[in-house]
Length: 263
Image (tube, rainbow, N blue to C red; front, side, top):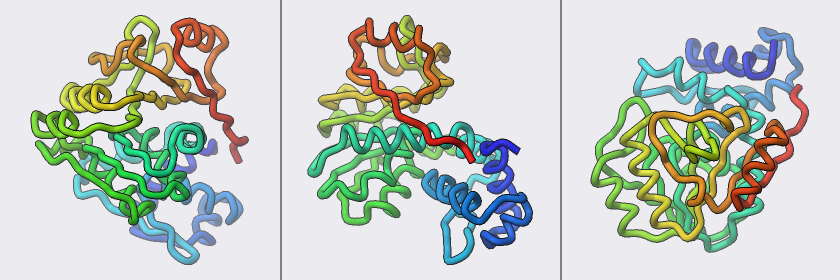
């Protein structure tokens, strides 16, 4: 079983039973406790489980009709997202920074790697992002936008959320999407959430796209940013040489995050 499929199966199992031990999970999935612990850490960083002594507890989902979708998002290309998140945190975030974070799982992968950055102020319109900030960075200043709650994405959208970012300024905005091409720029499929992302990037000194390589070369219905608006882009080693060169030719500061071998 491939790592992504195994993590999806672990999360599905925990959603059904509520909690389990690392030893029993190892027996169920025929993997070492070290591998299971690594899988659970990735799922915890994504916000879907909480590791306890010797096991893990499913965090639950108040929107139960979306469990399958959330499990899929949490486990697809998890190693790549984790590598991108760690790289972005180490390369771009400084102590005393003011940050905007969108609702994407790749953006959320940055959060666990911010623990060594002192005195951060961070704003987001995403319930899951705010929850992760509270768990990993309880001493930081955390701001939520308010607005109309989108049950599907668990984000605040609409005029209130958009106006929030018009009234604040950040040094860096980290955004993602479901696709990126040179012609179309960064794109997403959620119209209301995309409007908030646009407001977020307009109020940031630097906008940094974090996106795994499988989404490069694909586009979606709604444009988040034009290519010329993107100052930096962080992706993983799966990017093709052609895409790498095309992005560099556009003047974007391209960064490739190294991905550790899958277990």
